[in-house]
Length: 358
Image (cartoon, rainbow, N blue to C red; front, side, top):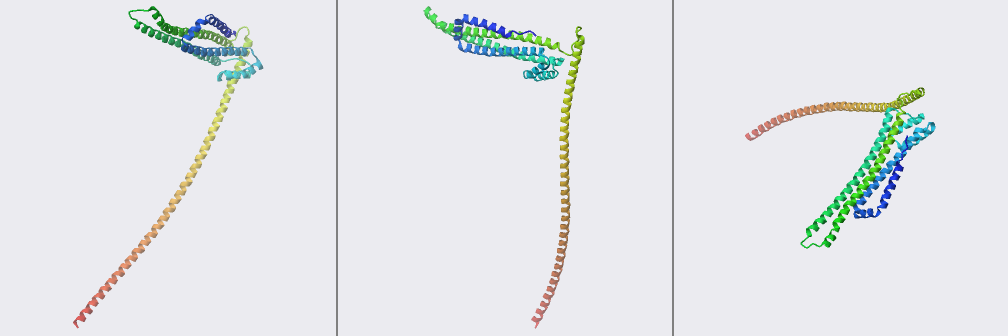
């Protein structure tokens, strides 16, 4: 795996920038303070972009060293190293390296090669997009300052031209031209700093991108040589064949252990589901039993209520019959009393008639 000299290249590039700034300090100082607002914004964007570039460069150097160490370590030292660096990889890649650490040997399948290269490419693409964003922002702020300065200069020039009359005083015109010239200085000063910042970020981004491409190419060459499905060479065919068979058996063992682990998890899940179902069935049966008991109690209550209601109805009918009988008897007695009273009245009338005749 080739050594990357990205930090050394950055150091040389920074020396060149410092030399240019030092040799043109007064000019750059004047341009900077001609438009402090826009130039401060540009320098802030440049600073943030440089932080992103430096961080990406340090990560690239660390990844280069990591893969170089993985390539040359063997046995227990490889296992110890892979166990210690699992935090810098994504979950799928870290899991793959953890499995290889248990076998104390490095090899890859096609899917694992795809996972590693895809992770590296996505990581580098994200860093490139951030750098491109800050390059564009530096250019846009520089152009915005240019347009603002030119607009100020044109406004001042138009006021000067409109104020001219018949008598032209050259000295007065030269004094009044100072404001438009300062406006143009604002515009071109912001353009200078914006373009310079964009160039610096672009060059550093280009160096970083080329170094990342070299790193990915080296990693792909290395892991492609360790794919267990790769063809056997003619020079050491027996050794490579034995290693390939051993690695295939290791992969088969890994897949079998993964399958066993998944089956055990599935069995545990099924046991949990069955336990929940049995508990649910027991609860449902208990609820049904309680419901049947409640229904039986209600049925007995309704039956007792019907019996009591029947008995009450029979007693009521008997009472009504007794009452009607007594009423009929009393009516009969009352009728007899009326008849006796009528007879008494008739006898009294006859007695009165006899008394009147005498």
